[in-house]
Image (cartoon, rainbow, N blue to C red):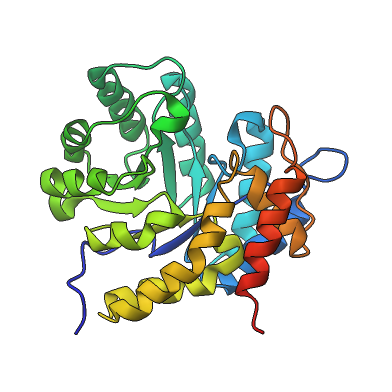
Length: 301
């Protein structure tokens, strides 16, 4: 028996929030980014999100973001969608960024809640409204991650934004399945909700999410894809078994600030993506040991 499906996912069910690879000299490694992007698509990703939290957007210049987008878009053209992170805590800057993403051919824009300045809900509504209206033909994914931004986009505010046709999806990264439930109650099928937390993907699917914007898919994309397929096919025991098998890795990938662990894990798996840029630092020995153990447990014996 299949599970009743929530709204059709506008960007597919599995998207990877992609790391930004750096060369030993600290520059963005565009060749490696292109190879990694192709690898992710080969391993189940239907979309790639660039220059988000995992992509270290605060430390990338606009020129670097533009070059990274072009390299990845060429690498996966026709095989996967590419979303550009265009958020900022300056509305004018975010408007400029989303306009540039639309001109460059992005398939969507990830727009994060403004960080540091902690606007009230009417300020958040005005901010997102201005950004979405600046690129009316570009689908927008709202991104709520209060642990990073210091404030949260409330479901009732999100619901008011749905009069904008290009506000189509929402990345839920508050750490609570209740966020998904409240959004479903207020927004129904008009809004496609994606889990923003790998450990909560299956629980969020159960309350109405359509898929996940994943970090763990850098390493276990096919397994996450299968878990989602099992869920929507009604094979819940199989989905749960995969969820439980992947959970130690999902936890290890957030043992410290993202993307520190996933970059270390990729290096352990043979992808020399480099250390994060300051003020983030490389994974310490404890995190690397935990990642090594979690990855080893997933390998066939």
